Every structure is written in C-alpha cells, then in structure tokens.
Image 1 (cartoon, rainbow, N blue to C red):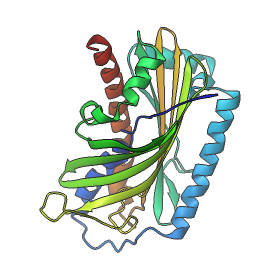
Image 2: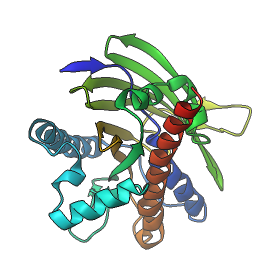
Image 3: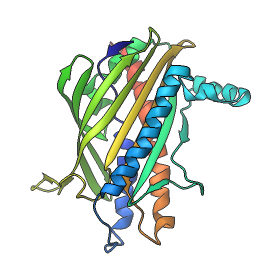
Length: 288
C-alpha cells in the first residue's frame, strides 16, 4: 500500500452549519442548565468511533470500497444512475432504534456519509484539489476562512483550519487535525483524519477574541473523525466522505424543537461540500 499526503477538511462545516442555527434557536432559552464535556461522553464517543473504525477496516479489506456497491441490485442501479446524472447521494448512519440521532451521556453523535461522482477526471486531479489547503477558503467559502499545514512528515501531517458560520449568531472554531492519506492502487485512495483540537472563539465579532478552553464552551463541536475514499472508474472519480461528530445533548423537553437543526442542516451542508469539491475539480481542469 502506497501513501499520499493530504486530505479534504471542509466536512467540519456539516456540524458547524447545523449548530450555528441551533444556537440561534437556543438564544430564546437562556437557562437550559447544560454542562461541559464529561468523561462518560468522551468514552461513549470513543466506543462508537472504534466500531466505525473496525467497519471501515473490514470494507477496505473485503469490500465494498464504496458503500453504494453493497446495495441490492435494484438500489445499486438506481443509486449509480443518480450519481452519473450529477446528484449527491447521502445516508445517515447515527440513528437509534426510534429513528433519532445516536445519543451518548451528555452528548449526541452525528454520522453522515455521502458520495459524489466527478466525470471526465482522474484520481490524481481530484487529489490535487483535496490537498490544496491554501485555497480551501476559496473552494469551500464561506465556511472555511483559513487553512494551513503546520507540519508534515511524509504521509502524516498536522493541519490548522478555521471555520466561520453566521446565522443569527456568529460561530468561529479553530481546529487542528492529524491526517494520514493512503494510496491503495492506481485507481483508489483513502484518508483518515482526527480533529485533535477544537476550540470555540469567544466574542468572534468583537475586539477581544480569545479561545474558550476545549470542552468548556457552547458544545457546537467537541469531536470529529473523518474518512474519505476515492475511486476512479466509469469515466470519472467517485468521492465518498463519512464524518462522525460529537456535540452536546438536546435540552430536556426541547428535542422536538432542536432536532430538525441537528438532523437536516448537516445533510444539506454535506451535499454542498461534495458539490463544491466537484466544482473546484472541474474548474481547475478547465482553467489549470
């Protein structure tokens, strides 16, 4: 197995978009009595991630490489027809027995996965854009406002990303990511990334900006784990992205009001992220 450096990071916008809207709703409920990130929450999330990691390892080894290839015959044909026509196909994985978001003590897990097809390009052209961190603020504006590689040793490196979202209130997160990228063959690649530090910026619109201690904030995003896969075939490249994130829990009695912010907006933003990736790749191919 060969290695490649770099990976796309705009997936953080999925949760950020949802929860900035979430905060707008919460401004009408000032005394919710929530608490900071707890050890039990961290451990529950770690257990979920461990299971996800095992599942990803198995499908990398035994297939299917793309989750859509594991669908039934009719679903497979329908899904790939949609992809070939330009649609983004999404699925939600973090659902409990009642159809709601996966819950953990004091928090919530959000697990979304999507695929987009980029026609008439090869895998190296897609990788070039995904690894072009210096221009991610252009490709994925307005959610990505800054990006830089802080260190790199071969295929392993650290990346700083700042994300900004304004909807009723402004939310800014400074994040640091530990990344490794793998080349599986001439037509396949995948990456693994962990957000090793997430800090919410206090007073983002004011003159006294400073970071809140990680885990001692509004709980917009406490953890994020990301898996990407690329496969070149059918006259283009399929790009698959899975993001597992941890946020604070819903307030008792207000879940009916807040749940749509948590479940709907992440889906919409993942759709945007994948479409923006395709747009950037095709624009660069047309204007190298």
